[in-house]
Image (cartoon, rainbow, N blue to C red; front, side, top):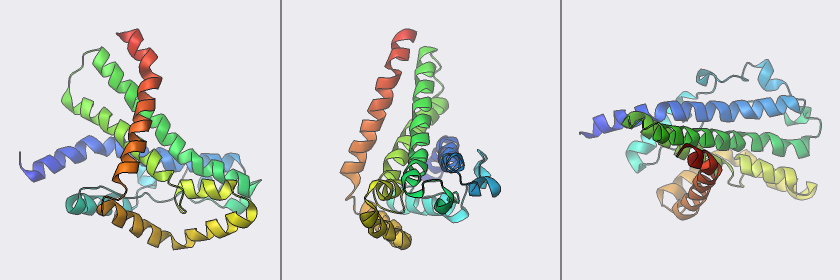
Length: 223
């Protein structure tokens, strides 16, 4: 199988899991923000599971393909859901919950894909494409959950940290967010240098392990 054919097959396997992962991640931020008093995302039509509402042509399509072909890491981003933290009823406290909603959505989706894997195995459905897609759904969502929890603004983990730190420290720490592009490029560079491989893979495997533990009762029931 030539490289182009392999790439096309890989894209086909990952397409649906990735689109759902980014769509629910972003929509979750908007839904929680609306719950706490900020309707900005709702007013701009971003409370949607339609991937087209969340795709950034460069960050979601071109950049991951470029990085996959150059360094083997399909790293990218979606169009952020707009949140006006000043409109939250308790901005400092509730911004942490809004930020946490995205990784939590990825955790829930990863668990759902793991359940699908268990069901496919239980009913002896051995179609390789669907097995690979379900496995991709597990890995993609585990990776998104872990990566977004890195405690550096503007990642969700950084906003969670800003929300829980004392106000004086929160102002200083939150100020890092203005250098978001620099942070993004630094993370890409560190991944290119394989500096983050060990901690990220350990964290991803831990999350996947949690999925396996949580579906164990279902596995035992069906087998």
